[in-house]
Image 1 (tube, rainbow, N blue to C red):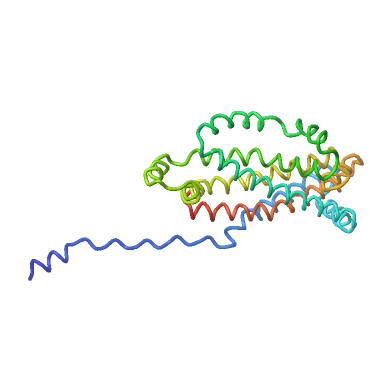
Image 2 (image 1 turned 30 degrees about the vertical axis):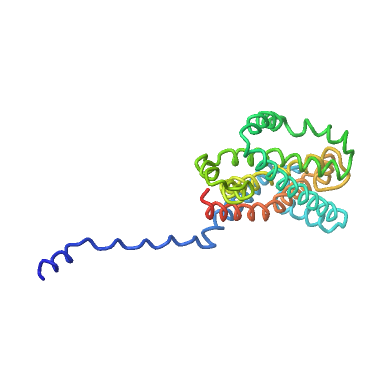
Length: 272
């Protein structure tokens, strides 16, 4: 009996379970960006005061001019027009790039054949190809939407192809040995493996789509936020220019935060 008791006493105790790490509070999550934004505004204000120039506005002057612009129905219509084209072009490029990349990335032959061509296209400055869109689509919504689609489609397609081609071969060989059908292979192996990279691509290509839209509106358009920005540049209205730049940043912030949240959720779930 004493021997049994001694063994129980000397046996190593079970390792305590590690409690899950607490999630960061909202204050810790959003405090750093807010602090950086406040510091940026303070530096902007300080630079404007030190420069003491009639051309370089203070943040208060820029916000005042932005408030005046937003009070005009034409300006608000241009902003809404840009948001509509951006949403349609970005969603279309994301869906088309992901589906086509998944379809072609599963084939090693097509991956080797197509990737060099699309990488060379992606290396060309976007604005160089814009005259081609104007020639075929004309000046208007079609060229703006088409260029927005192109600016995001090519990088999204490349991300989809690369992520699909990098699926571990052992999983594909096991599926082949079990005679798994192609739809089930795509649904249960390829898509879960590629989803983290696709989520990252969605976040990255949003900014490219927005940039493509602004370029199209600045160079050949009579509406949109890019058109308003270029008109202020031609009139050298710096306070309006800075106000419009702030508005563009505010427009891009909510989708960026949402896409970043989606990327974190997908990466945590599928172990990217």
